[in-house]
Length: 115
Image 1 (cartoon, rainbow, N blue to C red):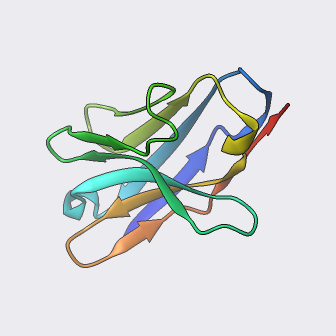
Image 2: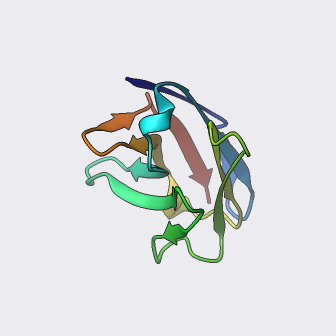
């Protein structure tokens, strides 16, 4: 099992920045990728960014050039630096960790961007 705890959400004006953190604990040696998803009201949960075991990163087109995913050297904490935030970035952001057999999720953190 893997436990994920997010922090760093909040309210920010358009154009501002926020940094989300996700701390993993448990059997994280099973994990081969970690990432961030978001879900806005009335919409499906969507991938925002992911970082794979070898360090390769993926981003959704809507956040490329504005968001950066990174992790610490121990690979137990993943960050999402969000710059040039837009009102359409408003959502609950969930940390995700993938193992070969299972997906793990954090409890989510609210990000609200005012216009």
